[in-house]
Image (cartoon, rainbow, N blue to C red; front, side, top):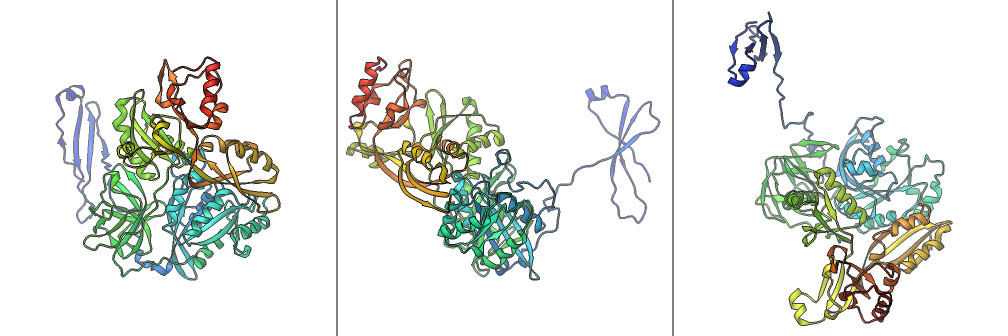
Length: 627
């Protein structure tokens, strides 16, 4: 080995400090005939050192190629593909079953640390719930053939039902998980009907049979009575211990049909989910409904009409595994240089350039049930918060965004959510993922008002207007009637708590529609609620009254006329818009104490029901009314 010494030039100020240090570049010459390339080294020697210290450069070689060989997706024709979701009530073991399926198919190594592998968000691990549907592709050997199983793990809480509805659009079947101890719960019923209406194959799975109080016979009878599924079709498992989990995979292959996609058709894919990467831009999860797509192809967004080049595509195992192609019936991801969040719309159709196809139906837009104002802690943070909101709404398309402003809080937005937990999780993700601290106003529900004059109709552009901000609630003199949102609520509870729960519902202005026994000790009740009565604390009170055994789910039931009152809170004689609220006339005397509140005259412009006279006399007699 020969050393070629070449002194390095060092800047003046630094050379002054290191005048007694000599740094040289070295090239190692290898022996003749060797195929090893020359490796640069660095020689560092102080004046009092007799020999130098040699260190080899260890520059990292970055490569876009995966750490494993690319997977040949052409080995999986449509007839050997199964796409399915796992749906259940919250905490019935969906994520645990997903962990066992990943282990059994070799997608992840089997270790004791495998808990909630698909729950990748910090908020999911902290709360112990799934809030974001996640996809994983599994390779399963059955009868001497390898099958591609595309699994989607979905949330279980009612506030994230939109994630479930989007996930099942990319599937042909579902695993309906039911806790063998708790039995059928409210969200179990809701998720069943989502899959039933989509005409998917439903495989009932009884989980947690290892628990001491598990009663699978009772739960099978519930499934047979409510869902009309023969109890012989139920699979009894313990996801925690892995008992009978292999039977679940066998039944997925046998019962769930392959996708109807055809390889010979032009490429057509549905974007059913997406995330934002700071370096690669938008990563879209797609279900291929026809044809094939290759890396380097030019694809077009049916929604935006823009053309993109496919930079990367692949499958999730559950980590990204790049592939050269994706074929009909398969589920994967695609990176195509989409840099703006508005370019990747959930429900969009992708097709090859110059090969247009009819757009897929997409998804029914999510209907926001709760609205709240969100403002930066300091107006100098407005731009960064706007960027964070845009990127997060790409990952959670069920959130609606409208610009808003406040005299006290400045510029901000009014966001629409599917529920109160959805709102809390969104704010927590803003803080954890984007380090954004925000001010959130009190949640409210969307009301409607039927305008009375042609002038106002022309001004608003429509006869019936939706009010999501209580400060913009129109005066009674301007409207024919007010409308409030209603929901159909389903409560499943042990019959020991029926009396308490009925009293709670009646106190929330609920109307009972149905009440049936699903077994000897459990009751399913259906009520029609005003949405405003359940969004804040109803669920907590229900759990408290039933010692945690009752479950609750609700769905939209339209609007009904109501006697609504706008209440302004004044500070030094001036109304504070952020504290303005809407209340029902019958509850105004119960909701607010006699003293300590100052009402503006505008809040007395009530609907003509007689309540205004009662309120006037009440506050006038106590000398706490001011206008």
